[in-house]
Length: 92
Image 1 (tube, rainbow, N blue to C red):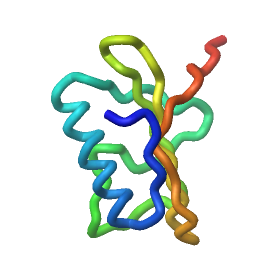
Image 2 (cartoon, helix red, strand yellow; image 1 turned 135 degrees about the vertical axis):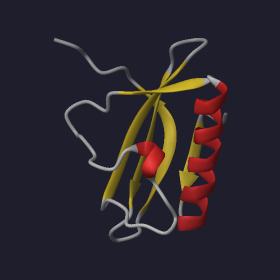
Image 3 (cartoon, one colour; image 1 turned 120 degrees about the horizontal axis):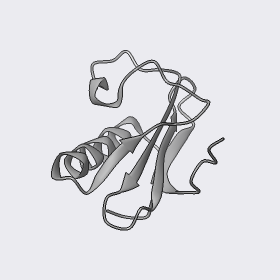
Image 4 (spheres, rainbow, N blue to C red; image 1 turned 30 degrees about the horizontal axis):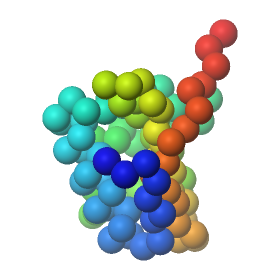
């Protein structure tokens, strides 16, 4: 998987979601707790048919190296988003 993908359109968003779903299915990455920003729509329930949350935020960890990644997209205004490396969240 690429370390950074800029998302500018709904088509790019759903293409990226498809790549992430395959990586989860293959065991390459695992979904992890997104931290204080909880999204009510589960990642595996995202559908092109909608509805979508106004803001998508999902976190994943590479099963091999432990690197954290996040998928972030602002869907309400359509300002885009990204898939990129992320710093691990601090735990209490």
